Length: 216
Image: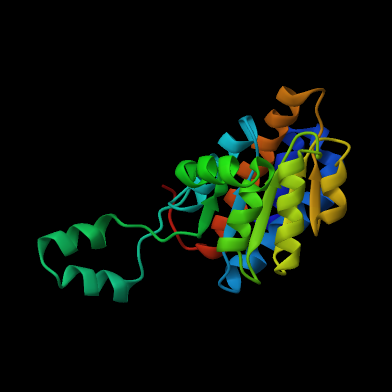
């Protein structure tokens, strides 16, 4: 299915997302560009959006809707190590590198206590982010201070910043290369829109990098 056909199908199912069409398409291109140049995706958000960060990373780090067998040369090197290597060769999958910044509990509690709780994600971007990487910053209001500060830190190291917000975009929108201002009345409805959007993006990015992979 082509990019436009897939996006048309999404908008046919969820017509309320039609105003976000150009934003969704631009986010797809930005993610593909980051992975194509060898970059990784960092993700941050609070509460339900933190759970979304882990959900997105989970879809990218293994097969989502397609099987992703390892390249033949790597499979051969693994299989040459005997039965355990054969197991690895048969079961490991290719991945798109994604890191949910919400998962570093020991670091986060120490940094929040010792330095500043607003800067936990920003510190992780400073530690892990590099030029060419991308940040997906998720906040339904667009105004979560720790997320906005993280976007500033990402821009300072020349990362691509993609926002996933509610209808207003909030202060985050001005810091983004692409900001998807998803519709919804209140946090829960906006988060429902977010899930539809990010599943589409994961599906599209996977299809781009693994076009020959059969369905999982």
